[in-house]
Length: 445
Ligand SMILES: *[C@@H]1O[C@H](CO)[C@@H](O)[C@H](O)[C@H]1NC(C)=O
Ligand SMILES: *[C@@H]1O[C@H](CO)[C@@H](O)[C@H](O)[C@H]1NC(C)=O
Ligand SMILES: *[C@@H]1O[C@H](CO)[C@@H](O)[C@H](O)[C@H]1NC(C)=O
Ligand SMILES: *[C@@H]1O[C@H](CO)[C@@H](O)[C@H](O)[C@H]1NC(C)=O
Ligand SMILES: *[C@@H]1O[C@H](CO)[C@@H](O)[C@H](O)[C@H]1NC(C)=O
Image (cartoon, rainbow, N blue to C red; front, side, top):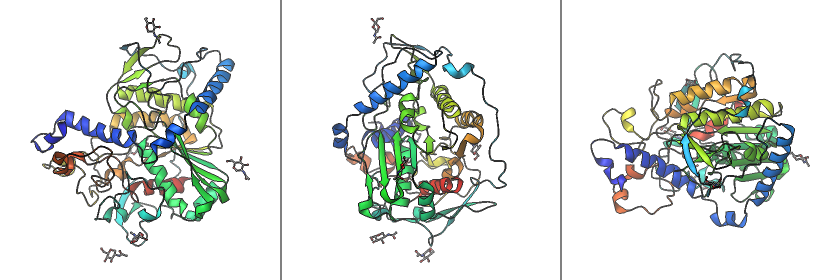
């Protein structure tokens, strides 16, 4: 429908929205891990645990809503929708913590630097040797023949990134749970981490649980797990099923992370992200105290701020100080080649080298969102380490799957004759850019 307009003179806004939505949808809607397994594993248990946890906390804190709100799922609907009232989470009255600034102790900025071609130490693993590789990200397997994207090392300007060391990483993880929490970009980073680490574990000493909201990779001899929790909006929402969810009509509880926190609170190392799901138009808010399913509607940025504040409140008041908590900033997209090559009309398709211009910043990386994140995370001081991967990933227009991935919907001849029209310029090939995000995680761990 809209896709065939790609080759017309001007880019059409609906096309962009459609493309953007298509890839998030297609990648997230369908999962490379067996969909059938999910149906065999109904998450009723999680619901019960969540209800228990919500009930016990409400008793202790009378200022919270004292009615147990129903759990949102993909069938949840709003009875009616009104404009956002300006309401904040119940914790908004409590005094904010000291606004301690982070990381000035370090002279160098690990996130400012350049990509250096290095085909002796990269890639850090072989795509076809990782049994947990995703068909969305295995670009070589799906026909990409230019493999340059696998050979780049990140070189900070005034210092060096700690050298990746599999055994040292496993020692850091011994007896621990490392959990990634977020959307499909974070899932890509999780798969990268599993692929980086799995090769040294004998096949009979490792396992992967079936795909579910919480997916777990286990390494027996280290008594360690590397987990991924699907929570694209961080707070509870109607999109918390990793396979069946609603991108078009997102409903969230701006005042509740409990459903997810009941899963992530047991992890020792937490890596959060959230961004793209807030870039799809307004979001509906269903407060926990609302009894008639009257939703409020708010723009994505405002809604993301409410969600980030709910998350930050959990970090500030509930997180064990021994936990290591990371927040990964927005992952850039490369949907419009005119941004790095004025006058052109493509996207990331057929891009084979990184961008050299160190000041490059694409319009998909929303600055007001970045400032909001900086403000919210800044208040948490040293409790959270920011993995500021945005700028360094901006340069990597060559790193996306484009057409070299599995697509879940059949492609028609119109699309096939115009590869840019169905290119995925949002996710990242593996081995590739997310491996470097994990090297940064290793560096700061
Ligand atoms: C690395 O790249 C250089 C320059 O492109 C090439 O000459 C060399 O054969 C490559 N080495 C390996 C191991 O791929
Ligand atoms: C990955 O492994 C396959 C099979 O063992 C091998 O053919 C291929 O050359 C390897 N690729 C890289 C980039 O080393
Ligand atoms: C394995 O790790 C868990 C924490 O993740 C800990 O509770 C348990 O005692 C550990 N087991 C052994 C045998 O070390
Ligand atoms: C939706 O609104 C109607 C009319 O106000 C009310 O009777 C009904 O209970 C509401 N539904 C829910 C689930 O709150
Ligand atoms: C991340 O780095 C950019 C510069 O590349 C900066 O503008 C932004 O504020 C940083 N974000 C956070 C959350 O620290």
